[in-house]
Image (cartoon, rainbow, N blue to C red):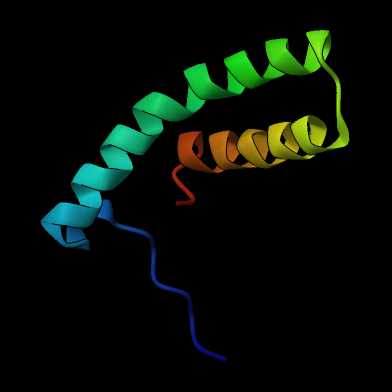
Length: 65
């Protein structure tokens, strides 16, 4: 069984590092906005989108993505 290599974001191409940097800065305010929107206008789509944004927020801030 092969050992998984540790994640190093500096091995990514520069354009992908820049995209990841900007996405990390945008994802948290977008998630908060979607949470407020879901509180006031709850629909199935809004709730599913909030779950997806929450998952992406968690993955970005734990450096999994």
